[in-house]
Image (cartoon, one colour):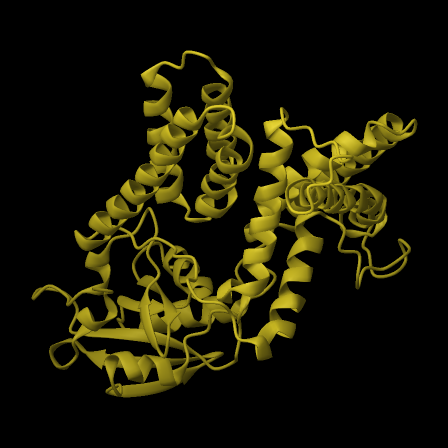
Length: 398
């Protein structure tokens, strides 16, 4: 979002400047390409809102500047995506792609459920399931402040104001540009408010109508633009109220106390890997299985537990099969056929329980075929494949 804000601020300067320097367009191009390459969510939360501003607000004032900025953004977006494709093709990481399909109507209730939880979590107002008093399942007062309902409940009015401000601004835009109501006064010079409104609207709308939330847990990260830019719109409304400033300071103080309490509680808890991970790590070492694959939640932790003696690389679902879970610090070479002097067997940790991101038997067999051996170990079934009889290059997305 830092990139998005920087791109918007530069684009706004170009739109309002009477003599924009070509360097400004170059910087917008570079930042946009980097943002889109790093996270395609930038297209929805940054590129499209600026394009809409150029079309609705800036074009009537300066068609040339609007076209230049729009063209710069479009070319930068294409450049960023092409660069990512080339990186992936030459053995680099595989980027996250936003869904290009609308979700099925029959699954709308699922998207609504996950989307609502995601919004509650990202705004910090999800108090559901929390004990109301310190005696309701909390280990200490600090634990109650960290995980209890006080901070979420106090944040609710701010979240309501943010949501109301988005709706009110959208209603004003509708009356201004659709019904042509001349009595409506929309601040056309405040590009930040327009940008915030469209970033929130497109992000939330996209999450609810596309497949991005299907089959996922509360995907809070998709709503980060909604949190930032709805807060900007809400702050404009809150500051108009006599109680706005003291109330905001109170909420911030309680939120800071909750963050500090979480830090203290987390350090004192000294979270460690669970016994099931220790069990599978020890079993793999005892059976000299040193290279294999697992789900996102089981791969790195087993690798660390064995001090890198057992290397477990992450896989993710790709339709009915499996694909590499590749990001910045990964490489497709991990997922291709082993070297001749490498281990003669590789394994796959198949999850026995239907947990988030689980590697299921059907997907593993659909990708690699039936294993030479299948051995139950704790919550996993270890599928063992002979290297000479298995084509591991099927894992790599071409």
